[in-house]
Image (cartoon, rainbow, N blue to C red; front, side):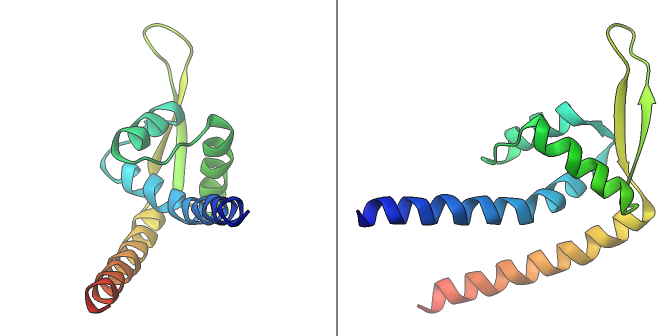
Length: 117
């Protein structure tokens, strides 16, 4: 029974941890170039073990757009349907720097704790 409880706890903890990181990862990926939603999913899968569905990324991108952290524009493709590309705004770049400082500080603190115990 305790294994079931531990599995539930870990699954729930991973989910909460992932939710907190997704915005940061999306902004990091958009720092280098504009991307469309599926491209962001592919890049996340390439660099992380976090799995993200289209049903998760588009509401998140819309929220980031409402907060003026990203902007979007449609681009016609040579073949296929148009794609909506997202890019970092100046506000998004500023927020990303603050987020990056916090994550770096947190990583340093966690490393210190792991090395001391």
